[in-house]
Image 1 (cartoon, helix red, strand yellow):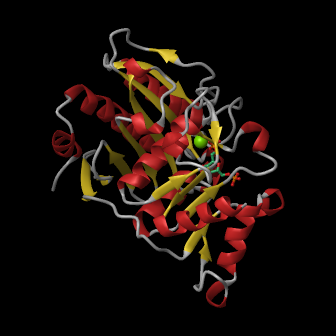
Image 2: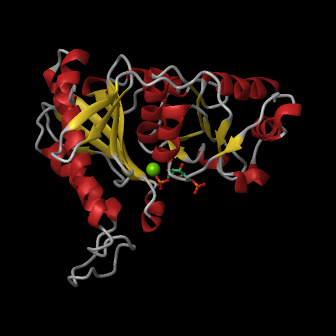
Length: 315
Ligand code: AHM
Ligand code: MG
């Protein structure tokens, strides 16, 4: 079976780019090991309290951020790190060729209930600076800490899935993920309905109307509330994920972050034949203006994303 190192050699001749990805994969292995035993170590609560050893407890997202930092510090090819956990970008190596943007532990509000969470990352050419459009990504991926630990990766070509084996090796388990063109599953936080815009309301109403409604088919709703888990389901069996602009998030530009949540996920979903949009334009075409910029996120099965786009074109 192909492993991660072998696969990377087929995706890029740039050994330093492969090395940057391997550093993030190694951070993922270590974060996964911490998460597996976190309830025993008393690490699932909030920062500020003590663990069972009486040590000052660090929230797992701080621990995960430190793990990523430690791995990237050891890699001289990394220039700058942008992290959801750090207000400012961190300079690592002056001669580094790559910038990395990461959410070291997305969905951490789910940790206490042992639901899948993940590490999301995007690799950019350092020469282009921090604020580059998603189309400029050199690679992106996420690690999903679920029943199995999965690494989903895309350099320029197909989106591939690897599974961590007992020996700590990433084994390729899906060569080229394909998001089915059509689907009958949508993922949105419906408790926010009162804040939705006309396009989101229109799309969801049409979907829940079922086979006798305008969509002409029956839908199911799935919402883990952990983006990596929701997107992983969509990558494996189709569906659409929506965190649209709504009246509560409009002043911030949306809920999810462009550089380390939306862009890498859009890169992966598009590499698997899916589509992504803010509703108004492709996510990967959004010009970033700040490292923690937020953006509306709609992505998944192409046919469903086109239906949402049609609602925005009308609204
Ligand atoms: P986080 O980066 O603080 O963990 O927030 C991002 C998470 C996503 O994983 C998820 O899709 C979303 O927030 C859930 O939002 P909601 O609380 O509206 O369900
Ligand atoms: Mg996040």
